[in-house]
Length: 236
Ligand SMILES: NC(=O)c1ccc[n+]([C@@H]2O[C@H](COP(=O)([O-])OP(=O)(O)OC[C@H]3O[C@@H](n4cnc5c(N)ncnc54)[C@H](OP(=O)(O)O)[C@@H]3O)[C@@H](O)[C@H]2O)c1
Image (cartoon, rainbow, N blue to C red; front, side, top):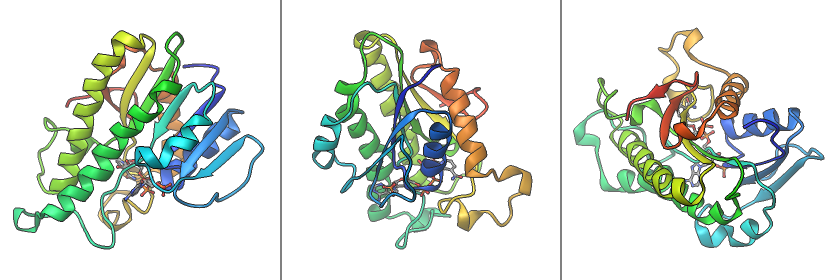
């Protein structure tokens, strides 16, 4: 996807969201940003829209305003919050955390795609990228733990793959991809950075650059895939 003019970033207020917004603005791209938070800065090419949440009924009016989109990047996701930390063992697994993780990591992203789809072109190249996670790969799970996050990201990957098959028929040039950004220094990874070697923790700016590079090189053959930040395919 070269020569982009207009990108929508959903979940623009988070660590990777803000870095992606800044990256595309620096590239001269018009950015529509959706966030539950106020704009962290102003820019002539930035349309920052505070949304009440990401459920379809909360996005109806905003979706109407979207025009000439080249693509969408959704960063929506959660690993922990004030109530939950990732489960280290089976005894910590609970329905509340599972439900909330599935809601934020899988349900909201697929409903977002459903909502925005009418605004994505049918006859020219476009992309719909959702940030996912390598730990959502079932094949790659050698460590265990993090039940809710792993399972909800695995569900996300399946939802995206399924949508890519259907939309491959109606939107032949639309590429749907899940991208693993690598461990990035944001509030999401903050509690887990201590034992990480410094060269394995990336700045949001570097990760945004890498994500944008993967997007630029996307091909229709990659639709429905889970991609690493270096562009290689990860197993489901
Ligand atoms: N950081 C990492 O190391 C890492 C590694 C692998 C994968 N990822 C994935 O990358 C994506 C971005 O992560 P990040 O590190 O930038 O995290 P972040 O700073 O926490 O951002 C996550 C975004 O998701 C939205 N969000 C979070 N909880 C929500 C909720 N309950 N309801 C609705 N929206 C909610 C927020 O959007 P607004 O506040 O703007 O509305 C926020 O911008 C996530 O999908 C994450 O799973 C991150």
